[in-house]
Length: 168
Image (cartoon, rainbow, N blue to C red; front, top):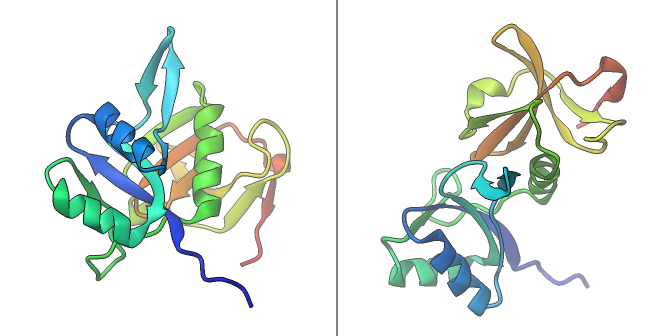
């Protein structure tokens, strides 16, 4: 019998002291991920105040109750519980951040109006294996990589032959 999964990734908006919060989470053996890119030798957050943490939901709630002013977690719609981040979405997001260059635009927080068209996967090139949506933004065709309800990145100039439709 399969064991029920209890540890998930969660997205946070951090209000102050990101390094201190990361250290607290590390001390509790929680994995963290802060999307940053290196610009002229300095780590610069891709989306300021965004931090992902991997832990048990109830432990996150307990920590939040003791540290209310430090951060806010993204919630499951219609609930006060932390909303787990989809593993595939976060994996694609991390890949794009790691390869981030001039062809990627940070759109910031996920907005439903960007979820148009079919879900697709890039099958060749740097972003191979990444799933997202194709949309038009400012007259340009872009490939969107999304962490639902959290953040969106847009990649420009993906050749059509590198794209295949994902069956849902």
